[in-house]
Image (cartoon, rainbow, N blue to C red; front, top):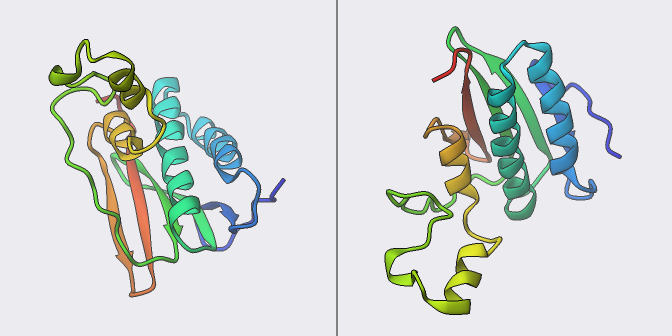
Length: 157
């Protein structure tokens, strides 16, 4: 198990490409931090799941080392995942329906349509978008890194 350590104010967890299962550790650390901040349970669950997806994406697609951090504003908690790949991923177009709803042309489409719907790949940012009500994005850090972020409201939306 990787040990979290503090590197900058707000850093909760730091990992490398050699860290086993960083998404699980990030979920645990983030859940404890949000609970100690008094966040509502549903906001914690949605935030932990969305942040876990960002951690998994960074670990799979970007260079490390990586950091998970929190910062508070007057209206929200910002959860950030830093990686050392300056490229912002292509963000897919978000359909006007749930990411788990079959496309109208695929309804009744048999096994192939069902397998496409249940695929574990390619819906991560859709899930982040749904869980955060669109309050997420990317920002560059100089020319060598980027931060993927989600905003968790202090009051329920």
